[in-house]
Image (cartoon, rainbow, N blue to C red):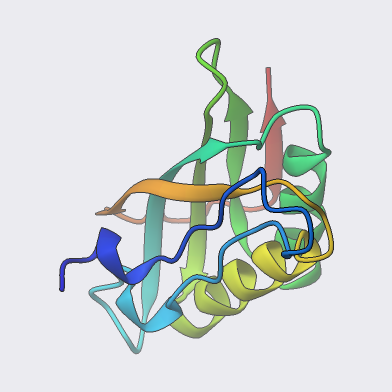
Length: 127
């Protein structure tokens, strides 16, 4: 099973199912388990017009993580998140959990490890 096969997705037409797919946080590409990691992820599905960027920023700030999030014209959302591997995993759990009660879905379509940016602080919503 490949990395992206480990993410489950649900049909946005399913009337009685929770919206956002659950993410296997142990499959995220976080190469430095004991130190600083940076994850670059692209989300697709219904992730614009639902408060996604502000929810992501709120969760990241509450966990002391840094990075940024921005919308793209094609309807996807791009995000970079930096912190400990456990912090990034917790961020993803909280982000997906925040949308479980809704009847729409989004998923991670791409996730790659990036080099951490030393001294970066705060999480920004980019436009």
